[in-house]
Image 1 (cartoon, each protein chain N blue to C red):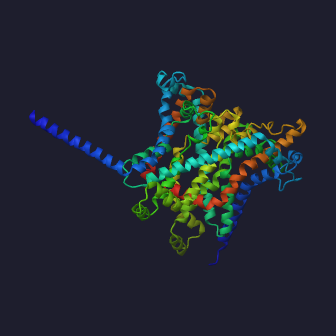
Image 2: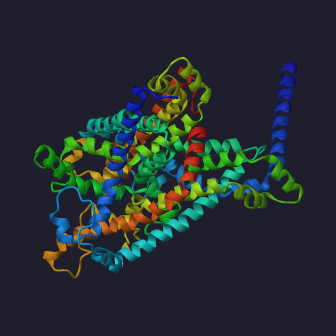
Image 3: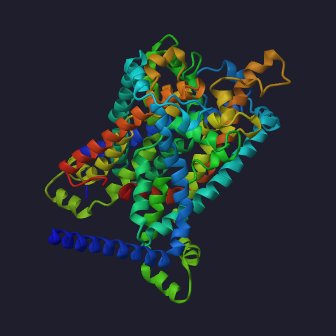
Length: 323
Length: 291
Protein backbone atom coordinates (compact mmCIF):
# COMPACT_ATOMS: atom_id res chain seq x y z
CA UNK A 1 0.00 0.00 0.00
CA UNK A 2 2.64 2.46 1.08
CA UNK A 3 4.90 1.30 -1.67
CA UNK A 4 2.21 1.96 -4.22
CA UNK A 5 1.54 5.51 -3.15
CA UNK A 6 5.25 6.20 -3.14
CA UNK A 7 5.44 4.93 -6.69
CA UNK A 8 2.43 6.98 -7.66
CA UNK A 9 3.92 10.03 -6.05
CA UNK A 10 7.16 9.51 -7.84
CA UNK A 11 5.27 9.12 -11.09
CA UNK A 12 3.24 12.20 -10.42
CA UNK A 13 6.23 14.31 -9.64
CA UNK A 14 8.01 13.18 -12.77
CA UNK A 15 4.90 13.98 -14.77
CA UNK A 16 4.59 17.41 -13.26
CA UNK A 17 8.27 17.89 -13.90
CA UNK A 18 7.72 17.05 -17.52
CA UNK A 19 4.80 19.45 -17.73
CA UNK A 20 6.84 22.16 -16.08
CA UNK A 21 9.77 21.68 -18.38
CA UNK A 22 7.43 21.68 -21.37
CA UNK A 23 5.90 24.97 -20.29
CA UNK A 24 9.37 26.27 -19.77
CA UNK A 25 10.37 25.29 -23.27
CA UNK A 26 7.24 26.90 -24.73
CA UNK A 27 7.99 30.11 -22.88
CA UNK A 28 11.58 30.16 -24.04
CA UNK A 29 10.59 29.37 -27.60
CA UNK A 30 7.95 32.07 -27.63
CA UNK A 31 10.37 34.62 -26.23
CA UNK A 32 12.98 33.82 -28.83
CA UNK A 33 10.62 33.45 -31.80
CA UNK A 34 8.05 36.11 -30.93
CA UNK A 35 8.45 37.81 -34.25
CA UNK A 36 8.22 34.55 -36.18
CA UNK A 37 4.88 33.81 -34.54
CA UNK A 38 3.73 37.35 -35.24
CA UNK A 39 4.57 36.84 -38.90
CA UNK A 40 2.88 33.50 -39.26
CA UNK A 41 -0.24 34.45 -37.32
CA UNK A 42 -2.19 35.99 -40.23
CA UNK A 43 -1.52 32.84 -42.24
CA UNK A 44 -2.64 30.61 -39.39
CA UNK A 45 -5.71 32.79 -38.95
CA UNK A 46 -6.52 32.40 -42.65
CA UNK A 47 -6.25 28.62 -42.41
CA UNK A 48 -8.36 28.44 -39.28
CA UNK A 49 -11.13 30.61 -40.71
CA UNK A 50 -11.27 29.74 -44.40
CA UNK A 51 -9.96 26.16 -44.46
CA UNK A 52 -10.81 24.68 -41.09
CA UNK A 53 -13.96 26.80 -40.75
CA UNK A 54 -15.62 24.93 -43.63
CA UNK A 55 -14.43 21.62 -42.15
CA UNK A 56 -16.20 22.55 -38.93
CA UNK A 57 -19.22 23.52 -41.04
CA UNK A 58 -19.28 20.01 -42.50
CA UNK A 59 -21.28 18.94 -39.44
CA UNK A 60 -24.36 20.13 -41.31
CA UNK A 61 -24.02 17.02 -43.45
CA UNK A 62 -25.34 15.17 -40.36
CA UNK A 63 -27.93 17.80 -39.52
CA UNK A 64 -31.00 19.39 -40.99
CA UNK A 65 -29.43 22.76 -41.46
CA UNK A 66 -31.68 25.76 -41.50
CA UNK A 67 -30.13 29.23 -41.69
CA UNK A 68 -32.50 30.47 -38.98
CA UNK A 69 -31.22 27.90 -36.45
CA UNK A 70 -27.56 28.16 -37.44
CA UNK A 71 -24.83 25.53 -37.38
CA UNK A 72 -25.24 24.59 -33.73
CA UNK A 73 -28.99 24.94 -33.40
CA UNK A 74 -30.01 22.72 -36.31
CA UNK A 75 -31.16 19.23 -35.28
CA UNK A 76 -28.99 16.14 -35.84
CA UNK A 77 -30.29 13.58 -38.33
CA UNK A 78 -27.34 11.16 -38.48
CA UNK A 79 -26.64 9.54 -41.81
CA UNK A 80 -30.01 10.34 -43.35
CA UNK A 81 -28.68 12.59 -46.12
CA UNK A 82 -26.05 10.01 -47.02
CA UNK A 83 -28.70 7.29 -47.24
CA UNK A 84 -30.86 9.50 -49.39
CA UNK A 85 -27.94 10.14 -51.74
CA UNK A 86 -26.89 6.47 -51.96
CA UNK A 87 -30.46 5.49 -52.78
CA UNK A 88 -31.09 8.25 -55.28
CA UNK A 89 -31.32 7.72 -59.01
CA UNK A 90 -28.33 10.07 -59.45
CA UNK A 91 -25.85 8.19 -57.27
CA UNK A 92 -24.58 5.64 -59.79
CA UNK A 93 -24.67 8.05 -62.70
CA UNK A 94 -22.63 10.64 -60.78
CA UNK A 95 -20.16 8.05 -59.55
CA UNK A 96 -19.77 6.57 -63.04
CA UNK A 97 -19.25 9.98 -64.69
CA UNK A 98 -16.82 11.16 -62.04
CA UNK A 99 -14.74 8.01 -62.22
CA UNK A 100 -14.79 7.74 -66.01
CA UNK A 101 -13.78 11.36 -66.62
CA UNK A 102 -10.94 11.02 -64.10
CA UNK A 103 -9.88 7.70 -65.51
CA UNK A 104 -9.83 8.99 -69.09
CA UNK A 105 -7.81 12.01 -68.13
CA UNK A 106 -5.30 9.73 -66.35
CA UNK A 107 -5.25 7.51 -69.42
CA UNK A 108 -4.94 10.22 -72.09
CA UNK A 109 -4.09 13.63 -70.64
CA UNK A 110 -1.38 12.51 -68.21
CA UNK A 111 0.71 10.54 -70.72
CA UNK A 112 0.28 13.36 -73.28
CA UNK A 113 2.50 15.61 -71.17
CA UNK A 114 5.13 12.87 -70.86
CA UNK A 115 5.08 12.17 -74.60
CA UNK A 116 5.42 15.85 -75.45
CA UNK A 117 8.33 16.15 -73.03
CA UNK A 118 10.03 13.12 -74.59
CA UNK A 119 9.62 14.60 -78.08
CA UNK A 120 10.83 18.04 -77.01
CA UNK A 121 13.80 16.47 -75.26
CA UNK A 122 14.95 15.01 -78.55
CA UNK A 123 14.85 18.32 -80.40
CA UNK A 124 18.36 19.54 -81.18
CA UNK A 125 17.55 23.12 -82.23
CA UNK A 126 17.17 25.34 -79.19
CA UNK A 127 15.18 27.98 -81.06
CA UNK A 128 12.67 25.45 -82.38
CA UNK A 129 12.30 23.89 -78.96
CA UNK A 130 11.70 27.24 -77.31
CA UNK A 131 9.15 28.26 -79.92
CA UNK A 132 7.17 25.04 -79.54
CA UNK A 133 7.27 25.42 -75.76
CA UNK A 134 6.15 29.05 -75.81
CA UNK A 135 3.24 28.19 -78.12
CA UNK A 136 2.11 25.11 -76.22
CA UNK A 137 2.25 26.80 -72.79
CA UNK A 138 0.09 29.64 -74.00
CA UNK A 139 -3.41 28.15 -73.66
CA UNK A 140 -2.69 27.37 -70.01
CA UNK A 141 -3.01 31.11 -69.35
CA UNK A 142 -6.31 31.47 -71.16
CA UNK A 143 -9.31 31.36 -68.83
CA UNK A 144 -11.65 28.40 -68.73
CA UNK A 145 -14.52 30.67 -69.72
CA UNK A 146 -12.70 31.60 -72.91
CA UNK A 147 -11.55 28.03 -73.60
CA UNK A 148 -15.08 26.70 -73.31
CA UNK A 149 -16.37 29.68 -75.28
CA UNK A 150 -13.98 28.81 -78.11
CA UNK A 151 -15.06 25.19 -77.84
CA UNK A 152 -18.73 26.17 -78.26
CA UNK A 153 -17.87 28.34 -81.21
CA UNK A 154 -15.65 25.87 -83.01
CA UNK A 155 -17.83 22.81 -82.51
CA UNK A 156 -21.14 24.52 -83.34
CA UNK A 157 -23.10 23.19 -86.31
CA UNK A 158 -21.74 26.02 -88.43
CA UNK A 159 -18.39 26.09 -86.63
CA UNK A 160 -14.90 25.53 -87.93
CA UNK A 161 -14.69 21.85 -86.90
CA UNK A 162 -17.86 20.89 -88.75
CA UNK A 163 -16.79 22.95 -91.75
CA UNK A 164 -13.48 21.12 -91.95
CA UNK A 165 -15.02 17.68 -91.38
CA UNK A 166 -17.64 18.42 -94.02
CA UNK A 167 -15.06 19.64 -96.50
CA UNK A 168 -12.62 16.76 -96.00
CA UNK A 169 -14.93 13.80 -95.39
CA UNK A 170 -18.37 15.05 -96.33
CA UNK A 171 -19.67 14.44 -92.81
CA UNK A 172 -23.02 15.99 -91.90
CA UNK A 173 -22.71 18.75 -89.28
CA UNK A 174 -22.85 17.44 -85.70
CA UNK A 175 -24.05 19.53 -82.75
CA UNK A 176 -21.18 18.30 -80.58
CA UNK A 177 -21.99 20.22 -77.41
CA UNK A 178 -25.61 19.04 -77.38
CA UNK A 179 -24.80 15.34 -77.55
CA UNK A 180 -24.04 13.33 -74.46
CA UNK A 181 -21.86 10.83 -76.34
CA UNK A 182 -19.43 13.57 -77.38
CA UNK A 183 -19.03 15.15 -73.99
CA UNK A 184 -16.12 13.10 -72.68
CA UNK A 185 -14.16 13.43 -75.91
CA UNK A 186 -14.60 17.19 -75.95
CA UNK A 187 -13.78 17.52 -72.27
CA UNK A 188 -10.58 15.47 -72.38
CA UNK A 189 -9.56 16.73 -75.83
CA UNK A 190 -9.81 20.39 -74.89
CA UNK A 191 -8.06 19.64 -71.62
CA UNK A 192 -5.11 18.16 -73.46
CA UNK A 193 -5.12 21.08 -75.87
CA UNK A 194 -4.99 23.55 -73.01
CA UNK A 195 -2.54 21.85 -70.68
CA UNK A 196 -0.24 19.48 -72.53
CA UNK A 197 2.53 22.08 -72.88
CA UNK A 198 2.28 23.13 -69.29
CA UNK A 199 2.34 19.62 -67.90
CA UNK A 200 5.40 18.79 -70.00
CA UNK A 201 7.48 21.41 -68.11
CA UNK A 202 7.95 19.31 -65.05
CA UNK A 203 8.97 16.19 -67.00
CA UNK A 204 11.44 18.24 -69.05
CA UNK A 205 12.91 19.55 -65.82
CA UNK A 206 13.28 16.00 -64.54
CA UNK A 207 14.93 14.98 -67.83
CA UNK A 208 17.48 17.77 -67.60
CA UNK A 209 18.60 16.31 -64.27
CA UNK A 210 19.52 12.93 -65.77
CA UNK A 211 23.25 12.26 -65.72
CA UNK A 212 24.57 12.80 -69.31
CA UNK A 213 27.20 10.08 -68.83
CA UNK A 214 24.38 7.52 -68.89
CA UNK A 215 23.63 8.50 -72.49
CA UNK A 216 27.32 8.32 -73.39
CA UNK A 217 27.55 4.86 -71.95
CA UNK A 218 24.42 3.76 -73.80
CA UNK A 219 25.80 5.10 -77.07
CA UNK A 220 28.99 3.10 -76.51
CA UNK A 221 26.86 0.03 -76.09
CA UNK A 222 25.23 0.83 -79.41
CA UNK A 223 21.85 2.02 -78.20
CA UNK A 224 19.95 4.16 -80.72
CA UNK A 225 17.77 7.16 -79.91
CA UNK A 226 14.68 5.05 -79.25
CA UNK A 227 16.54 2.71 -76.94
CA UNK A 228 18.04 5.63 -75.04
CA UNK A 229 14.59 7.14 -74.67
CA UNK A 230 13.07 3.96 -73.28
CA UNK A 231 15.97 2.76 -71.15
CA UNK A 232 17.43 6.00 -69.81
CA UNK A 233 15.07 8.96 -70.17
CA UNK A 234 11.87 7.19 -69.12
CA UNK A 235 13.31 5.45 -66.04
CA UNK A 236 15.07 8.70 -65.20
CA UNK A 237 11.80 10.60 -64.84
CA UNK A 238 9.94 7.76 -63.13
CA UNK A 239 10.14 9.23 -59.60
CA UNK A 240 8.55 12.46 -60.88
CA UNK A 241 5.90 10.49 -62.74
CA UNK A 242 5.01 8.53 -59.62
CA UNK A 243 4.72 11.65 -57.43
CA UNK A 244 2.51 13.38 -59.97
CA UNK A 245 0.38 10.26 -60.30
CA UNK A 246 -0.14 10.14 -56.54
CA UNK A 247 -1.19 13.77 -56.57
CA UNK A 248 -3.55 13.14 -59.49
CA UNK A 249 -5.11 10.17 -57.76
CA UNK A 250 -5.68 12.39 -54.74
CA UNK A 251 -7.69 14.64 -57.03
CA UNK A 252 -9.43 11.67 -58.63
CA UNK A 253 -12.86 12.69 -57.41
CA UNK A 254 -12.40 16.33 -58.40
CA UNK A 255 -12.59 16.45 -62.18
CA UNK A 256 -12.59 19.98 -63.54
CA UNK A 257 -15.98 20.83 -62.10
CA UNK A 258 -15.67 24.47 -63.05
CA UNK A 259 -15.13 23.47 -66.63
CA UNK A 260 -18.03 21.03 -66.63
CA UNK A 261 -20.31 23.74 -65.25
CA UNK A 262 -19.40 25.84 -68.27
CA UNK A 263 -19.68 22.97 -70.75
CA UNK A 264 -22.71 20.94 -69.80
CA UNK A 265 -26.43 21.40 -70.28
CA UNK A 266 -29.43 19.21 -69.48
CA UNK A 267 -29.06 17.29 -72.76
CA UNK A 268 -25.57 16.15 -71.76
CA UNK A 269 -26.13 15.53 -68.03
CA UNK A 270 -26.19 11.80 -68.77
CA UNK A 271 -22.41 11.78 -69.31
CA UNK A 272 -21.37 15.18 -67.97
CA UNK A 273 -22.91 15.50 -64.53
CA UNK A 274 -20.35 14.68 -61.81
CA UNK A 275 -20.50 14.78 -58.02
CA UNK A 276 -19.01 18.29 -57.89
CA UNK A 277 -21.51 19.81 -60.31
CA UNK A 278 -24.39 18.04 -58.57
CA UNK A 279 -23.27 19.56 -55.26
CA UNK A 280 -23.33 22.98 -56.92
CA UNK A 281 -26.81 22.53 -58.37
CA UNK A 282 -28.36 21.04 -55.24
CA UNK A 283 -26.58 23.30 -52.79
CA UNK A 284 -26.12 26.70 -54.36
CA UNK A 285 -29.00 26.74 -56.84
CA UNK A 286 -31.59 24.80 -54.83
CA UNK A 287 -30.36 25.76 -51.33
CA UNK A 288 -30.37 22.11 -50.27
CA UNK A 289 -27.44 22.78 -47.95
CA UNK A 290 -27.28 19.74 -45.71
CA UNK A 291 -27.90 17.20 -48.45
CA UNK A 292 -25.28 18.66 -50.79
CA UNK A 293 -22.79 19.05 -47.94
CA UNK A 294 -23.22 15.31 -47.33
CA UNK A 295 -22.61 14.58 -51.00
CA UNK A 296 -19.52 16.81 -50.89
CA UNK A 297 -18.22 15.07 -47.78
CA UNK A 298 -18.67 11.68 -49.43
CA UNK A 299 -16.54 12.90 -52.33
CA UNK A 300 -13.85 14.39 -50.07
CA UNK A 301 -13.59 11.20 -48.00
CA UNK A 302 -13.18 8.98 -51.07
CA UNK A 303 -10.54 11.36 -52.45
CA UNK A 304 -8.64 11.31 -49.17
CA UNK A 305 -8.79 7.50 -48.94
CA UNK A 306 -7.55 7.12 -52.51
CA UNK A 307 -4.64 9.41 -51.78
CA UNK A 308 -3.60 7.44 -48.71
CA UNK A 309 -3.84 4.17 -50.64
CA UNK A 310 -1.89 5.53 -53.62
CA UNK A 311 0.81 6.85 -51.35
CA UNK A 312 1.01 3.51 -49.55
CA UNK A 313 1.41 1.64 -52.82
CA UNK A 314 4.07 4.07 -54.03
CA UNK A 315 5.93 3.58 -50.75
CA UNK A 316 5.89 -0.20 -51.18
CA UNK A 317 6.80 -0.23 -54.86
CA UNK A 318 9.64 2.25 -54.84
CA UNK A 319 11.11 4.77 -52.52
CA UNK A 320 9.13 7.69 -53.92
CA UNK A 321 6.39 8.95 -51.72
CA UNK A 322 4.59 12.09 -50.76
CA UNK A 323 5.06 11.74 -47.02
CA UNK B 1 29.11 11.87 -85.50
CA UNK B 2 27.18 10.87 -88.63
CA UNK B 3 23.54 10.20 -88.20
CA UNK B 4 21.98 7.02 -89.43
CA UNK B 5 18.94 7.07 -91.68
CA UNK B 6 16.75 5.91 -88.83
CA UNK B 7 17.89 8.77 -86.66
CA UNK B 8 17.24 11.32 -89.38
CA UNK B 9 13.75 9.94 -89.95
CA UNK B 10 13.17 10.16 -86.22
CA UNK B 11 14.28 13.80 -86.21
CA UNK B 12 12.08 14.75 -89.16
CA UNK B 13 9.08 12.94 -87.73
CA UNK B 14 9.61 14.62 -84.41
CA UNK B 15 9.78 18.08 -85.97
CA UNK B 16 6.66 17.44 -88.05
CA UNK B 17 4.66 16.27 -85.03
CA UNK B 18 5.74 19.22 -82.90
CA UNK B 19 5.03 21.70 -85.70
CA UNK B 20 1.55 20.25 -86.18
CA UNK B 21 0.91 20.43 -82.45
CA UNK B 22 2.02 24.07 -82.38
CA UNK B 23 -0.27 24.91 -85.29
CA UNK B 24 -3.25 23.20 -83.69
CA UNK B 25 -2.56 25.09 -80.47
CA UNK B 26 -2.04 28.45 -82.11
CA UNK B 27 -4.73 28.37 -84.76
CA UNK B 28 -7.87 28.78 -82.65
CA UNK B 29 -6.30 31.80 -80.96
CA UNK B 30 -5.29 33.28 -84.32
CA UNK B 31 -8.74 32.57 -85.75
CA UNK B 32 -10.30 34.63 -82.98
CA UNK B 33 -7.87 37.47 -83.58
CA UNK B 34 -8.58 37.44 -87.33
CA UNK B 35 -12.33 37.18 -86.90
CA UNK B 36 -12.40 40.03 -84.39
CA UNK B 37 -10.75 42.27 -86.97
CA UNK B 38 -12.94 41.22 -89.89
CA UNK B 39 -16.15 42.49 -91.37
CA UNK B 40 -19.03 40.91 -89.38
CA UNK B 41 -21.01 39.99 -92.48
CA UNK B 42 -18.02 38.11 -93.86
CA UNK B 43 -17.40 36.23 -90.59
CA UNK B 44 -21.06 35.19 -90.48
CA UNK B 45 -20.81 33.61 -93.94
CA UNK B 46 -17.30 32.26 -93.90
CA UNK B 47 -16.58 28.57 -93.71
CA UNK B 48 -13.54 26.80 -92.39
CA UNK B 49 -10.03 28.13 -92.25
CA UNK B 50 -9.38 31.84 -92.07
CA UNK B 51 -5.78 32.89 -92.64
CA UNK B 52 -6.00 36.66 -92.27
CA UNK B 53 -8.57 39.30 -91.31
CA UNK B 54 -11.00 39.92 -94.16
CA UNK B 55 -12.08 43.53 -94.86
CA UNK B 56 -10.11 44.80 -91.86
CA UNK B 57 -12.18 46.83 -89.40
CA UNK B 58 -11.95 47.67 -85.72
CA UNK B 59 -15.69 48.29 -85.35
CA UNK B 60 -16.04 45.37 -82.95
CA UNK B 61 -13.33 46.75 -80.67
CA UNK B 62 -15.00 50.17 -80.68
CA UNK B 63 -18.20 48.53 -79.50
CA UNK B 64 -16.38 46.61 -76.80
CA UNK B 65 -14.64 49.69 -75.46
CA UNK B 66 -17.80 51.78 -75.64
CA UNK B 67 -19.72 49.23 -73.64
CA UNK B 68 -20.05 50.43 -70.05
CA UNK B 69 -20.41 46.90 -68.64
CA UNK B 70 -17.07 45.84 -70.13
CA UNK B 71 -15.42 48.94 -68.73
CA UNK B 72 -16.79 48.36 -65.23
CA UNK B 73 -15.98 44.68 -65.18
CA UNK B 74 -12.51 45.31 -66.53
CA UNK B 75 -11.87 47.75 -63.73
CA UNK B 76 -13.24 45.24 -61.22
CA UNK B 77 -10.93 42.54 -62.52
CA UNK B 78 -7.97 44.92 -62.15
CA UNK B 79 -8.99 45.59 -58.54
CA UNK B 80 -9.29 41.87 -57.77
CA UNK B 81 -5.99 41.09 -59.46
CA UNK B 82 -4.01 43.88 -57.78
CA UNK B 83 -5.53 43.70 -54.29
CA UNK B 84 -5.85 39.91 -54.28
CA UNK B 85 -2.32 39.30 -55.53
CA UNK B 86 -0.87 41.85 -53.12
CA UNK B 87 -2.52 40.13 -50.17
CA UNK B 88 -1.46 36.72 -51.53
CA UNK B 89 2.18 37.77 -51.83
CA UNK B 90 2.32 39.42 -48.41
CA UNK B 91 0.75 36.49 -46.57
CA UNK B 92 2.60 33.82 -48.54
CA UNK B 93 6.01 35.40 -48.00
CA UNK B 94 5.37 36.04 -44.30
CA UNK B 95 4.25 32.44 -43.82
CA UNK B 96 6.98 30.98 -45.99
CA UNK B 97 9.65 32.93 -44.13
CA UNK B 98 8.35 32.02 -40.68
CA UNK B 99 8.07 28.35 -41.62
CA UNK B 100 11.51 28.24 -43.19
CA UNK B 101 13.17 29.15 -39.86
CA UNK B 102 14.82 26.43 -37.85
CA UNK B 103 14.32 25.96 -34.11
CA UNK B 104 10.76 27.18 -34.12
CA UNK B 105 8.83 24.87 -31.84
CA UNK B 106 5.41 24.81 -33.51
CA UNK B 107 6.46 25.12 -37.12
CA UNK B 108 6.01 21.42 -37.89
CA UNK B 109 2.51 21.46 -36.45
CA UNK B 110 1.60 24.59 -38.44
CA UNK B 111 3.11 23.07 -41.57
CA UNK B 112 1.08 19.90 -41.09
CA UNK B 113 -2.04 21.98 -40.59
CA UNK B 114 -1.39 23.75 -43.89
CA UNK B 115 -0.46 20.66 -45.90
CA UNK B 116 -3.50 18.76 -44.61
CA UNK B 117 -5.79 21.26 -46.37
CA UNK B 118 -4.28 20.17 -49.68
CA UNK B 119 -5.77 16.73 -49.19
CA UNK B 120 -8.98 17.34 -47.34
CA UNK B 121 -11.32 20.27 -47.53
CA UNK B 122 -14.68 21.33 -46.22
CA UNK B 123 -16.03 21.74 -49.70
CA UNK B 124 -18.23 24.15 -51.55
CA UNK B 125 -21.36 24.29 -49.41
CA UNK B 126 -19.71 24.89 -46.01
CA UNK B 127 -17.49 27.53 -47.64
CA UNK B 128 -20.52 29.24 -49.14
CA UNK B 129 -22.32 29.24 -45.79
CA UNK B 130 -19.20 30.55 -44.04
CA UNK B 131 -18.81 33.44 -46.49
CA UNK B 132 -22.51 34.12 -46.01
CA UNK B 133 -22.16 34.00 -42.22
CA UNK B 134 -19.26 36.47 -42.36
CA UNK B 135 -21.47 38.87 -44.37
CA UNK B 136 -19.05 38.84 -47.28
CA UNK B 137 -21.65 37.99 -49.93
CA UNK B 138 -21.85 40.76 -52.50
CA UNK B 139 -18.62 42.39 -51.35
CA UNK B 140 -15.25 42.46 -53.03
CA UNK B 141 -13.77 40.70 -50.01
CA UNK B 142 -15.58 37.52 -51.02
CA UNK B 143 -13.20 37.20 -53.98
CA UNK B 144 -10.07 38.12 -52.05
CA UNK B 145 -10.21 36.62 -48.56
CA UNK B 146 -11.20 32.96 -49.17
CA UNK B 147 -8.20 32.54 -51.51
CA UNK B 148 -5.70 34.60 -49.53
CA UNK B 149 -3.05 31.85 -49.32
CA UNK B 150 -2.39 28.79 -51.46
CA UNK B 151 -0.70 25.93 -49.63
CA UNK B 152 1.05 24.83 -52.80
CA UNK B 153 2.56 28.28 -53.42
CA UNK B 154 3.54 28.62 -49.79
CA UNK B 155 5.50 25.38 -50.02
CA UNK B 156 7.27 26.57 -53.20
CA UNK B 157 8.27 29.81 -51.53
CA UNK B 158 9.36 28.13 -48.31
CA UNK B 159 11.60 25.77 -50.29
CA UNK B 160 13.17 28.77 -52.03
CA UNK B 161 13.76 30.57 -48.73
CA UNK B 162 15.36 27.50 -47.21
CA UNK B 163 17.97 27.58 -49.99
CA UNK B 164 19.34 30.96 -48.88
CA UNK B 165 22.61 30.56 -46.91
CA UNK B 166 22.21 31.01 -43.16
CA UNK B 167 25.39 33.04 -42.89
CA UNK B 168 23.75 36.02 -44.62
CA UNK B 169 21.01 36.17 -42.02
CA UNK B 170 23.36 35.58 -39.13
CA UNK B 171 25.56 38.50 -40.09
CA UNK B 172 22.46 40.69 -40.49
CA UNK B 173 21.27 39.63 -37.07
CA UNK B 174 24.61 40.57 -35.55
CA UNK B 175 24.13 44.00 -37.12
CA UNK B 176 20.85 44.20 -35.20
CA UNK B 177 18.36 43.27 -37.90
CA UNK B 178 15.08 41.67 -36.82
CA UNK B 179 13.06 39.08 -38.75
CA UNK B 180 11.03 41.66 -40.67
CA UNK B 181 14.18 43.43 -41.80
CA UNK B 182 15.78 40.14 -42.79
CA UNK B 183 12.73 39.12 -44.80
CA UNK B 184 12.30 42.40 -46.66
CA UNK B 185 15.95 43.44 -47.00
CA UNK B 186 17.68 40.12 -47.57
CA UNK B 187 15.44 37.13 -48.21
CA UNK B 188 12.91 38.69 -50.61
CA UNK B 189 15.45 40.57 -52.75
CA UNK B 190 17.42 37.35 -53.09
CA UNK B 191 14.28 35.45 -54.09
CA UNK B 192 13.01 37.77 -56.81
CA UNK B 193 12.57 34.99 -59.39
CA UNK B 194 10.33 33.08 -57.01
CA UNK B 195 8.40 36.24 -56.14
CA UNK B 196 7.90 36.79 -59.88
CA UNK B 197 6.55 33.24 -60.20
CA UNK B 198 4.18 33.81 -57.30
CA UNK B 199 2.94 37.08 -58.81
CA UNK B 200 2.31 35.27 -62.07
CA UNK B 201 0.54 32.27 -60.49
CA UNK B 202 -1.67 34.33 -58.21
CA UNK B 203 -2.21 37.06 -60.80
CA UNK B 204 -3.32 34.61 -63.49
CA UNK B 205 -5.58 32.91 -60.97
CA UNK B 206 -7.36 36.16 -60.08
CA UNK B 207 -7.50 37.30 -63.69
CA UNK B 208 -9.13 34.10 -64.86
CA UNK B 209 -11.34 33.21 -61.93
CA UNK B 210 -15.11 33.37 -62.28
CA UNK B 211 -16.64 30.64 -60.12
CA UNK B 212 -16.37 32.41 -56.76
CA UNK B 213 -17.65 35.58 -58.40
CA UNK B 214 -20.62 33.67 -59.74
CA UNK B 215 -21.63 32.19 -56.38
CA UNK B 216 -20.70 35.11 -54.12
CA UNK B 217 -21.79 38.13 -56.19
CA UNK B 218 -25.19 39.23 -57.41
CA UNK B 219 -24.44 42.91 -57.87
CA UNK B 220 -23.43 43.41 -61.51
CA UNK B 221 -21.40 46.45 -60.56
CA UNK B 222 -18.92 44.10 -58.84
CA UNK B 223 -18.66 41.51 -61.62
CA UNK B 224 -15.20 40.68 -62.96
CA UNK B 225 -14.72 40.52 -66.70
CA UNK B 226 -14.79 36.69 -66.81
CA UNK B 227 -18.37 36.69 -65.59
CA UNK B 228 -19.43 39.08 -68.34
CA UNK B 229 -17.51 36.92 -70.81
CA UNK B 230 -19.45 33.93 -69.56
CA UNK B 231 -22.72 35.66 -70.40
CA UNK B 232 -21.49 36.52 -73.86
CA UNK B 233 -19.73 33.26 -74.70
CA UNK B 234 -21.59 30.53 -72.85
CA UNK B 235 -25.08 31.91 -72.37
CA UNK B 236 -24.66 33.46 -75.83
CA UNK B 237 -26.23 36.68 -74.69
CA UNK B 238 -24.70 39.52 -76.67
CA UNK B 239 -27.71 41.79 -76.25
CA UNK B 240 -25.92 43.94 -73.71
CA UNK B 241 -23.13 44.42 -76.22
CA UNK B 242 -25.04 45.34 -79.34
CA UNK B 243 -27.59 47.80 -78.06
CA UNK B 244 -28.22 50.58 -80.54
CA UNK B 245 -27.84 48.31 -83.55
CA UNK B 246 -30.81 47.16 -85.58
CA UNK B 247 -31.87 43.57 -84.98
CA UNK B 248 -30.84 42.49 -88.50
CA UNK B 249 -27.29 43.72 -88.02
CA UNK B 250 -27.04 42.67 -84.39
CA UNK B 251 -26.57 38.96 -85.06
CA UNK B 252 -23.38 39.06 -87.16
CA UNK B 253 -21.97 41.99 -85.20
CA UNK B 254 -22.63 40.06 -82.02
CA UNK B 255 -20.28 37.36 -83.33
CA UNK B 256 -17.35 39.68 -83.97
CA UNK B 257 -17.96 41.52 -80.72
CA UNK B 258 -17.70 38.15 -79.02
CA UNK B 259 -14.28 37.58 -80.54
CA UNK B 260 -13.10 41.10 -79.78
CA UNK B 261 -14.12 40.65 -76.14
CA UNK B 262 -12.12 37.42 -75.91
CA UNK B 263 -9.06 39.21 -77.25
CA UNK B 264 -9.48 42.14 -74.89
CA UNK B 265 -9.85 39.83 -71.90
CA UNK B 266 -7.01 37.48 -72.83
CA UNK B 267 -4.25 39.53 -74.43
CA UNK B 268 -2.96 41.29 -71.28
CA UNK B 269 -2.13 38.03 -69.57
CA UNK B 270 -0.67 36.51 -72.74
CA UNK B 271 1.54 39.57 -73.20
CA UNK B 272 2.89 39.18 -69.70
CA UNK B 273 3.88 35.57 -69.77
CA UNK B 274 6.74 35.40 -72.32
CA UNK B 275 8.65 37.84 -70.11
CA UNK B 276 8.09 35.73 -67.03
CA UNK B 277 8.48 32.39 -68.78
CA UNK B 278 12.00 31.70 -67.54
CA UNK B 279 10.84 32.38 -63.99
CA UNK B 280 7.76 30.24 -63.94
CA UNK B 281 9.54 27.26 -65.41
CA UNK B 282 11.87 27.54 -62.45
CA UNK B 283 8.92 27.87 -60.10
CA UNK B 284 7.17 24.80 -61.44
CA UNK B 285 10.39 22.84 -61.03
CA UNK B 286 10.91 23.83 -57.41
CA UNK B 287 7.27 23.24 -56.60
CA UNK B 288 6.92 19.99 -58.46
CA UNK B 289 10.04 18.23 -57.30
CA UNK B 290 9.90 19.20 -53.66
CA UNK B 291 6.13 19.63 -53.35
